[in-house]
Amino acid sequence: MLLRLCHCGARTLLASAVLACCASGAFAGPCSVYNISVRGDFGEIRFNVEIADTNEERAQGLMHRASLPRASGMLFVYDRPQSVSFWMKNTLIPLDMLFLNERGEVVHIHENAIPGDLSPIPGGDNVFAVLEINGGLSQDFGIQVGAQMRHKSFPQNLAIWPC
Image 1 (tube, rainbow, N blue to C red):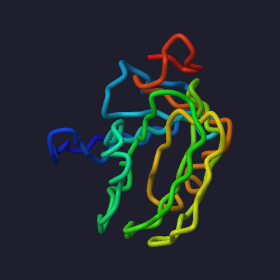
Image 2: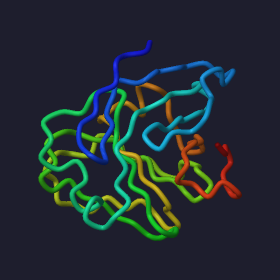
Image 3: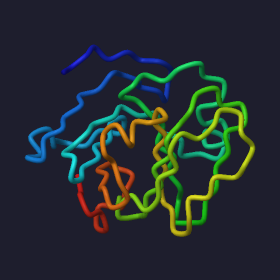
């Protein structure tokens, strides 16, 4: 299912994405900065993402948003693997957080983070990126620890699933 793309700001490209649950990798193609693919036993899923790769963008995250399109998310990318912790301050929608290592492997998932909750949500050590998506989607799609992500942000010489 392909839907029309819309531009929403200088660094933002949001769209309803192709959701492909096919293990064959038929949708694997050239990587785009604003698209990620996640694969695992469930097949392959593609999300359109906003990139948060500066301190200011990471601090803002998805705060103050009333909604997030189902096949969209925000990818937080760090300069190097590190210990990270999130919270839901000023966040209005429940989120799933997928914590990834430098190879693009999901190492931890926090499901259905509670809007407005100030409790820390630790992602573990050696986290290189975090994907935030609508709460409940990890379970709906069957995304589990060990799933693999493809995106240009991961060092391609280390990536499990390079571009």
